[in-house]
Image (cartoon, rainbow, N blue to C red; front, side, top):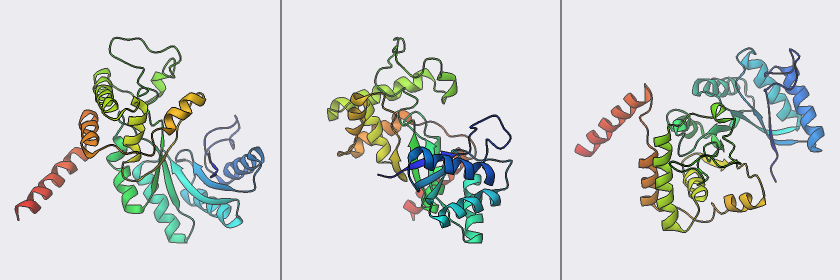
Length: 263
């Protein structure tokens, strides 16, 4: 068993109850160790980037945790590319512990991770830990065209907090998932999770099963693999034009590949 937890977000109303300064991180770690009844954390993560605290203070604190033996490894979560890269560079400069993982949102209806963070993860050997792999509950197989949301959907009252998705984009992906599910004999969420597991840099997916039956269903996503043709079918159904400069970079990369083939 590997124990992972996070800090940075607010746990009180005081000025020292949020962010990534030494005081808050130290108090949060000690509280986690008490609650978990353990003397160390395998992976200690920053839940977000704190622009109000010098990065050097945050990283030196995390390095002290590792040197003390209370933390084995450190990771980031929800960082932008430059925030994670700057953190890595500063850690290297001082010989401190470096982030080895990045907890990110990534799903068949949210592939922005591929634009910058995945190339960075490949370059820096960072493992991706995927949160909300079923797109905020949209890829459970229970959402269909012309049908109301299921009564127990997590989208009730929280849809505005999650990543926005156009209805037609969602239904296009669900149609492809239905088709592949029929070909494989698996469920829609199992196919969606298996697609993620096969993506570069993905180390693990974080599932939010409501009960034992959902847990068993989600665990059925491992032990088999989608075919290249099925992966391509899902890729095409979920493909979106990236924002600038990524669409421009993709165009140049396409030209580069064509040039290499023509030599």
